[in-house]
Amino acid sequence: MANNTNRLLTPGPTPLPENVRLSLAQDMIHHRKEEFKEIMARCQKNLQHLFGTSQEVLTLTCSGTGAMDAAISNLFQAGDHVAVVDGGKFGERWLEIARNYQLNPVRIEVPWGQAVNMEQISAVLADKKIKGLLVQASETSTGVRHPVKKIGKLTAKSDCLLVVDGISALGIAPCPMDEWQIDCLLTGSQKGLMLPPGLAFLALSERAWQKAEQNPHPYYFNLAAERQRCRVGQSLFTPAINLIVALEASLQEFAGTGLQAVYQKQWALTQMVRAGVASIGLSLLAPADYTWGLTAVCLPDGIDGSQLLKVASKRYGVYFAGGQGELKNRIVRIGHMGHVDWGDILAGLYALYSAFTACGGHSGARDYLENAMHAYEAALESWEEEI
Image 1: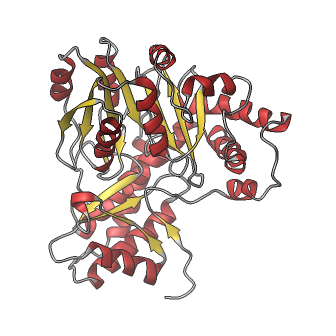
Image 2: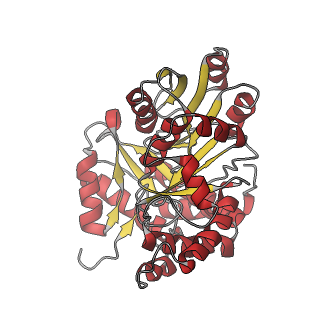
């Protein structure tokens, strides 16, 4: 089919709102001048609101993985023992970064598609040598939401720092840093924040700052020095200026809509996708403890995931993501985070159904779009903040 509107339903990058796209086209400004400092100051206030913290939120010019690297290299030293929740590709990334800095990671193994249980957390925290617990709020490779709020209640009673990768969670689902007693929360620009890739954001609790200021500092990811520069509306090194200008526009979207309305919409879109997928007859990788903004769909034997993605994009202009690691070609990941609405999801479900059947799958579904829409409307009405 020709001349389709392309729909980016991947777990990052995500579609950009019009005001963000227009802000990227503005003339370049200088990052050491007053105009830029004022932009940084306005962004800082809105970032603190988004993170749910009174601490400074640092803006780093890097990917989300850069923020993960910065967290480990500033908070821990070679030989430190840390616990890592490993339930997907990005749990594995925590392990890889920890080992790269010669830490001693204790792996908390979780089956892909499931959340870590609190018994596992309690058991590892009994070891007083553990100085940090590294976890994803949302495991992007599986669509699982780990119980960060419950974990924070335990780590706050210990000397263990809770370090949370919120890359596919911030701006999508509630994850208030101070209330949930998170010691380090980080995210990237290209998911819930509705920006192009290239920025990452990181905040530390007071006790995490004490560690970061005592430890030897990396040269580029020197968080203590970044905080000093942040306090005067600056960055330590040359930032991605145009992305920070766009960041202000993106954060204005959140301020105008309100976080609770954003979360309500993301919850409803999640219910919509899950209902539509179930009506088609496909199973969900995460039947429980699922994240918002991302749904991982299992493919039956004999269906080539990479071929399904090609059909969906070429015939319908809908772009999904495939599986990673052990799930490669076995799942389709549907992103419904950021600047996406119910119309995009209806198009995505139709593309999923059509590509699935074109690749040899069978479905007798006839009302999957109606069921999805009913689920969306019902979720909008039943949503509650603490859901």
